[in-house]
Length: 118
Image 1 (cartoon, rainbow, N blue to C red):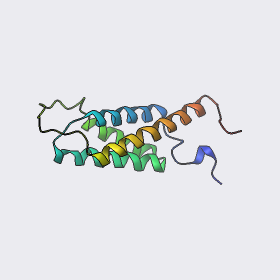
Image 2 (cartoon, one colour):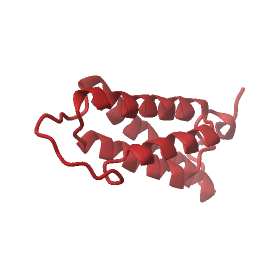
Image 3 (cartoon, rainbow, N blue to C red):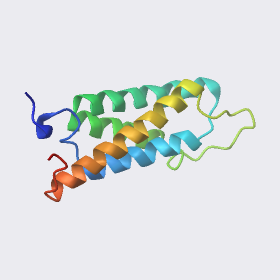
């Protein structure tokens, strides 16, 4: 039986999870040309896989990839034809934000020595 500390996702750095959540929230507010959404979608899937596996280095790489794609980093001239994220990506981002928030809380509790198990 796996202990809570050994279960996937619980050994991830809380600050990195927070950065991932912020970047995901930025994606949900972004507008891009339709064809340009494939790169952020692939980065979101890489982040999801890293979270699912509890793989810190892969999560760090996925966060770095999202940072490069961040609308706060890339200055583009807005085009009226730009669209918000496609619905499947918006749903995936929303789900990941909630998962990451929960895991970040779990990680913060472990760092404080708090254990929710009774």
